[in-house]
Length: 336
Length: 277
Image 1 (tube, rainbow over the protein chains, first blue to last red):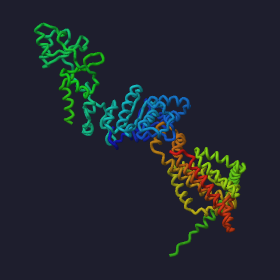
Image 2: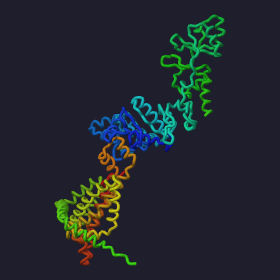
Image 3: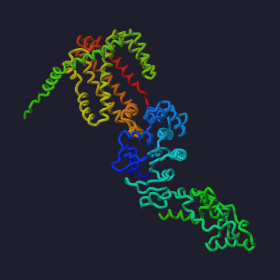
Image 4: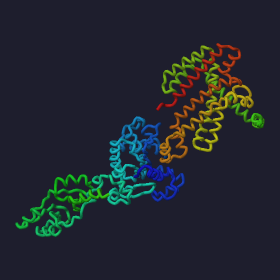
């Protein structure tokens, strides 16, 4: 991603040599696109990668299905086979039944679905998407983004998506390269870029981003240290809390699975009555997964003052979030 | 100051005669081919009696113009009028001349236009030649045509081809150059060979513009075929010429109406051949 003129579309076009790179290498499966001859390049363009364009770039004289089947037609695949594959791609993008429509009759969002179907029909390894959703209305754009994410979950292709919209980049990108003046200023995950910007340009760039949407529990949780075993006695638990200056402590079993939380005001009187941890621990704790964005954690915190436990799929405790962690993460934004 | 008189006229004259002396045999072959083409078209057009022709033509026009009923009916009326004026054979001869010259002009013009769109060097050579061809008064073409091919249909047709070709070249070139960059990129990105790109993307997208060139080419052919009567081309033009020479207002006017009818039919038909966007 980058502002216009930063060279992102040029870089994308270098990947399939719509623009010839002046130096360097582009390796796909070990083959160097940058130096291969015309014949190999054609083969690579046919089989390895396909492209989706900002302006949709549908062929106006062709119906939807003939647009989608274009790449297959170029490969010399028989009409029957390419129509079958094209139909498949058309239903993938949710346009089933529109095959014989003229492209000019479709709305912008639908036209870009055709563009996407055309790129998917050849089943390439790499999808090059050049500001593919920039020409769409905000609502349709957001819908297309969600669908692309859902599609990608199934397809698991390499997608190079060029965007000038930071929100879009943060939403779609597993890894984001921020470009400036033809150079990559920083490359990394959304969290890496937000929490650790490489230079002033990047930090300025991401200054306006709503961190609570991007940063997740994983980014702000503290180590779950200490926790107390459910089989320990209350005095041990009280001792730990006193030593670490805590008003509550998570209770786990031998496998570090979360069992509950023990609060000091309940534990202290109970200890005198020689009760056990099981008797006084609370089990109504908030448990979340590491990928929950802060935006969703804040309301949980507001309802329940107890710390929140972050657990993995085996219910093993990974970290703890207290109110201070969230405030800390939000304060970081102000420092920028 | 007296400028030296450059012998441009003489040089051209010498050149034309030299060509005629040394390549006369080629001209003869070319002449025979053109003659065959014209009589071929003429035989086809005159194969059916007028009424049968009119019915067949109306059906073909109706289908060819994407079911334009008004055009089909108008054509029937026009053809009937021509027949009632007794100009049937002459009109068919004119149409044969127009179709022959337009066909040859397009066969040369469209590929030239494609080459000019693809190659800047060719474009820079073709462009001044086209400017020259289009600004030179059409009568001037008649002179070398007569020298190479004598009098008759053939020199008339050659002059017509030269006159009618420029719009076909220009508009083909323009149409292909106007193909949006993204569509060109789509073609490349999906791995087209240059030929696939031309036939599957560029020509279809440029088709409306190319068809405008075809229309222009046919209309210019018609106008020149009439003028070519001055060097012996037959058809309605000859009838007009005779009308002028004899100051026969009626004969000249009737032939003129015939030409107008043919012009309208050919114009509307070629405009309706391509799908509207």
